[in-house]
Length: 168
Image (cartoon, rainbow, N blue to C red; front, side):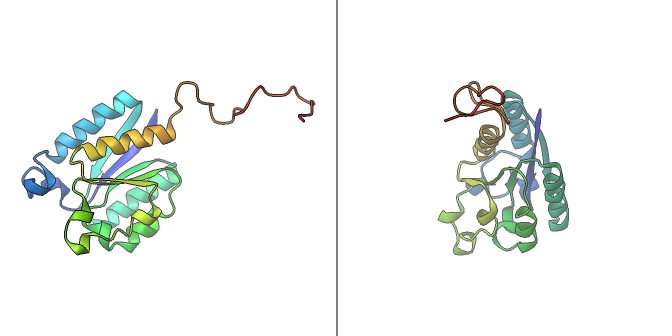
């Protein structure tokens, strides 16, 4: 089963009480439970973590890089200025989906810039808690074989020629 790290940055432990008009009423525990359920449905093992500490988050990214693990990341405030996080993410060895509960492009000007976006596979933003679930679906689509798709290492076109045979 493919493990995916679902990482959340600073202040997200305050969801449910923090600006519910912007971030919704779901708590981080609610989102973690939703991610676990979607992960089971998709055949993913979800390892859900949150920290307010930039160094700890960078360490988790290094863990993912070394383990070739996909990441779903809500960098929160680190989105806009953490070059340490961006540089760690640039070493990624598997898909990286950036996630935001709100849509930063519709908010204050300082939120419009993401230093993470340039090294991410893609970004899901503005769908509240659903953003995490959509990101997990993207990871599954990118990492897990689908029925009828070739398995890694198998030929992608037509039958394989017998050993020693030349294809024209």
